[in-house]
Every structure is written in structure tokens, then in C-alpha cells.
Image (cartoon, rainbow, N blue to C red; front, top):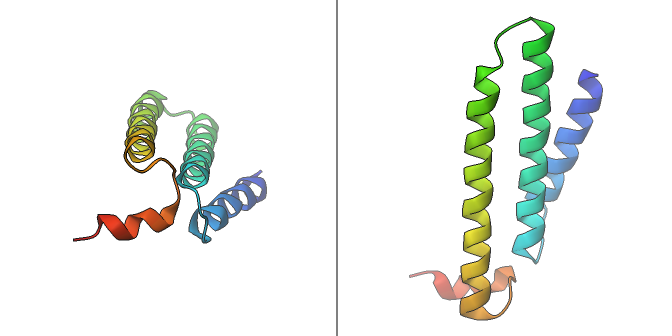
Length: 93
């Protein structure tokens, strides 16, 4: 089971760190990595019979991270008309 989680995590990190053109692909891969970390935490806490209160806190932070990413995506699409990464050169000071 640990091997399965490790392969899924590294696949998500590979997609996140590779050079992608769209912001939406990067946000989806980041959410995939957060979901894998969430599953690992649940598996670990249930295996050792710990309380699952930390899972609720982690889920709250991951939802806030997803909402922040989507709001950045929407504001970027409204400002520039697309979600390509080459538009970030215009945002630098």
C-alpha cells in the first residue's frame, strides 16, 4: 500500500514540476498531490488507531488552498483572457 501511495505521489509531483503551459493543469496536479497526502494521513492515523481530528484540519486547509488557486485562475482569465504561463512575464515588476 505504501508503494502505491508513493508512486501516485511522485506522479503528481512530476506533473506539478514539469513545464506545463496552463495554470489549470498545475492546479489540478497540486490538488492530486494534496489528495494523496490526505489518503496517507488517513491510512496512518487509522493504522495506529489515533484520533482523526487532524484530518478535518488538513481538509480545511486543502479546501482553502483550492479556493485560492481557483480565484487566482479566474482573475487571471478575466485580466488576460487565458491561463497560459507566458503571461506571468508581464506581471513581474
